[in-house]
Image (tube, rainbow, N blue to C red; front, side):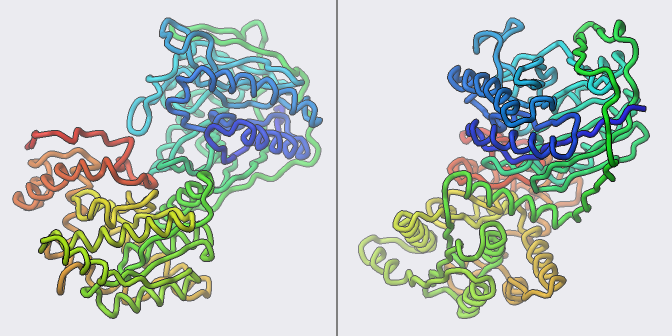
Length: 578
């Protein structure tokens, strides 16, 4: 059987930065050539970054993508890598942007060699669920392209094509010896297992290995987790790349030899195939490369890495050098602090303790203790004189004064951000965002919310896990034990506890998982054992807080349905379902 050495560039592109992304591809091409690779593949829209969203509707951006692709082909050749076939994901168009008559904007893959674009493949299946709305932008392609490389017929597909399956059926008819599937697939819990299952199924279907190549990196509220792999027809994994890190994965694959070239072009009712012959003779392989396999991550480490990378890339890709937020001594700001330290380094993290007359001494001490443990810049700004000056001028009391404290803190953080150029982080969790247990323009203020998609019960799990991780590495625990053990409180009035206003978080988070993530109705949740009056109350809080969430900062998505682009409910809404 012929052997092909395949290089997979699991890179971290930046949306809209075509020159930067082209440089990533060029560096990967040079590394792949040095490794003796016969083919290099890059991720979905690796040249433009993904998702480009409404940039796809700007003809200037589409034209820039097409032009940059042609220049990239020439640059790869000028770098001395022209003989290497390079599959590049990019944005294309073969008709007016507004067209829907078989032509228009395309989510595309091009194969480059010898300074030229050999062919262009257009994605056939589009995701139109969750965070995806590709049918808004793209026109489907109906022609599968195969390249004969070293005597092996290699088919090329894009992301959803592996889930929809039509291109794989055509690849099987064409007797492809390998299918490359390039992706920009964002992370959510449990998704890697679903990817493995479907790719193994496709490999068995076509009787040949399938490459699943994913990008890596944060893009607004999405984070791409890498984890590229190659699946064999028998369900085994032939090699795999790390999660949440850039990597060039190089693998030697023994593959079925190409059949009769006259039989290579096929058609079905929805798709046809075209064969491009690059090289008939089996490729030369010197010393065989042993396959590499990435270590598995446990559930909490996987989540932590997603949150860390999402925050790190949001800060770096948007031009910030540092972050700032309030460190109260509570669990949410503590977890945010350690996450920020891990993401961008403690010297770039500024935290402010802003005590009022209701702040407990143990919370102030816990905040200072954590800042010292993590090496953060720590300052104290007492807010009570500012609050008193407001109350002296405006007749307010009760909840209004509680919210005023939070808004004074938010105003101070924004002032410090303006003065020093820090990005303000909002440390709220998913449970609080769900029921509106936060003060708009107060503790919800910020440009990014790192744990916005983390339920309160998971906040505690992650805090405990991160301390255990530190112990296993012989390092000091970053989060003081008292912060984890004490009952959560906003400390906006005497002896306040979260339990004064909300049910136990185990109960609350169970209801929220069903109502928010699962779109369950009242009767569904009652059947699961939750008290009807509690379900009614929580569902009402969630519905009424929609206006707050619309004005909140973006945050890294880790669940099947985060508060953001994949949950779209009206603010003005009187429906109260059963």
